[in-house]
Image (cartoon, rainbow, N blue to C red; front, side):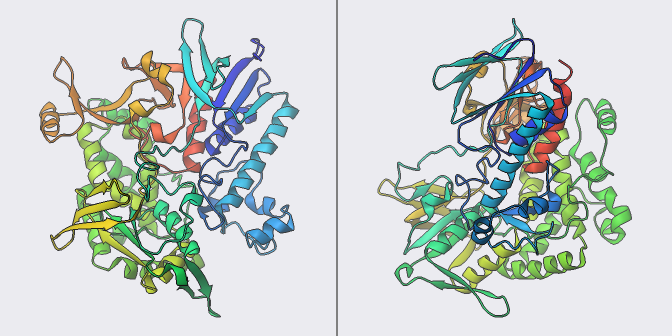
Length: 572
């Protein structure tokens, strides 16, 4: 059924957390002259993949607490007080002892987000804003019609609906390569129910991120039991029929992620960061580019002058490479699980004293602050980021919850969990008879060629390419374009092309590095190959904008992106 044309018709594709924040912006605008349609392929709004059974079991917990979550309608602390006893019991929540610093089970957090969506829908009704919720509905294509200033949504039933503006909020996506074709091969650990199986052999886990920890928590519970003694220490007893069970993480740097600690600014929105005006002035003086060293100096190093002068004196003359080398060297001096034990003690002190581990917090702020400038970096700087800073950020700002740390240490102490460094040249070779052969050079320079009956890829959400974008008409009609960054020095482009990097050049002799996903502008409009933005189509689906939006900051990203989009929408 078509929405009356007298109202501005807005579609939101997807009904997860990013859609929730986008919908909140629209409702808060209190404009009666809009009509909103939300398309969600599942039967629930709010939870998305990470906080539903698609991405979590009862054993999985969030890595953020109530005080770190952007305001929606009600706080988690308020909402917990309304929960029925069976829900509280299932997730071991005591409402009388709950506080804003606690992390929640992911499935329970999904229920909270769903409840917030319901409250926003009721608020919209009171404001006279029409909302059409289409659950169990799959969008298969988007067709732009610039002549009529409309965009058409095509459903899997062949039904079509026209809108004035549309926001793609389709969330996570793990494409399958060998899963289902090679026995024992998993392209991701999601949904966790598929890996909740008895295993009596060694399991290869690719990666050591939060995604890897998700897989470990699930597999451990199917092959043994965690026990807690009278002083709270966790141990693990292996099941009798899982005697060969062992988990081996394979990591490019051989390091485990860092733990949650107390954040001085729980929303990572430091007021000392560069403004849009600062960045524009810098671009104008730098041939249109934003230099990554400028961001590192101003949005990281300079902030320590007031907060930690001793640390500033140590790093003030360092570039990104030198800083990363220093931090990595400090981490690599200690065996991974020994470092985890030491960081657990450090994090506990931070939380108890409510004192931040400031350099880690500022690294998270830097990562988030890097989103806006990313599309203005030269290709040389993006390659530096990809090689040095981003691998460090992925380790340090993972913010592993304390309970996950305890379980990792319990499995390690039981001799059932290990981590090996495999380097960037490692190879996972699927075997036709099932399983994989992991090929890498170890830290002693010896080539390892090891077979595993079960393999789980746990590197996290992949940055998907332009060709992976699911709405084909936007590609064929050239409404969207691949994300790419220009080389400041063409000769550097030539060198990187010769090295095998994805580099292209034009007739004028300019060289470009192709990065993942599609091109977007600062307000998340899609951009065509001529650099023109489309005022009808916006995108918040992080797998498809990773080249120009490299930080995956969850709800903080949702809040920031939706704010830019709502302001841009109002201009049409």
